[in-house]
Image (cartoon, rainbow, N blue to C red; front, side, top):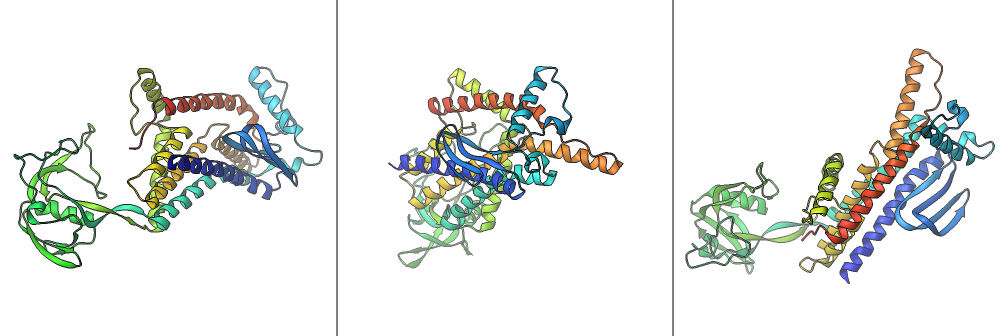
Length: 437
């Protein structure tokens, strides 16, 4: 049941993200006087629609995107001084200009999108991706600030019985030959809250871990709070080979992908997880970091798609870094909602964070400088604006609008390629999914 709830939440938020993305285009377009004839969520047959004012609002059968129809997206033949088409490329462009011109009502040429200034075009085209960025930040603020995220607290959750090798499989049982762990020998118990370690007041588990590592095999005093009273203990950590960790406590890998290790002090205690609310700054920082990581993934997308095809053909197992589509993200949402080892709050925060990452992916992906993506229209508008500025500086005649219809054949090609990649992701996400746990 929880899995179904997670998937339903994912679908609702996805549709909401698509709808708001198109609102990001529609609102500034209307504000600048452009007539918006349609606002649709989805593609294919129309399931429901209602006309309000001069705009038809509706929902279509396939929730794979959405669109707003802005009249005059392409300049007319007269505006660009088009001549008779001489090849198939020019014919496709001419057909696009003709279809665009047919939407312009008599006396409404001034309301066509192509008539907008470059800054206004940029506002309209960037409105959709920026809306996805805004949604992502809001979801992360709710998850990190409103709910909180799991962090290691200062309460002991587990005490090792013995010292096992760093490369021993998880769950390895102690044997008579294994030396006892220092914490168990000192009398530390699960449920104890660490108050101080070696005379230093404890405020976080990261601090505790650092103190233990730095203490080596020197005998130290430990003060714990147990059943409402403080208990003084004495422990002698051992020097053992353990993973090298970063500031967040995550294991660091070397150039070959292996976990780096070093000899440090070892006590044998594990922390309990607590839900801790973060600052707004932390949520924004997470959004910025995730956006940069997503951009890096998008840049290497062709290579990742090639790896995905290779893995699919060879029947290999996909790793955690493999790209996923909406089906894969929906599966993640279901798995997070079905986790029985976490509280409802943790699952909710995890689900919101996953949906935020989806919106960040939409933000970055739509900025690719390829038609029919928003980034393609942005590049066209910038080129047109640059030409106009150069003409103004030279005192030349204002140039004609950029003939963006010439990019229509490229847009068709990109659409087919993206459609093929989308179908591939749907297939592999079903037959060979990436699992988060």
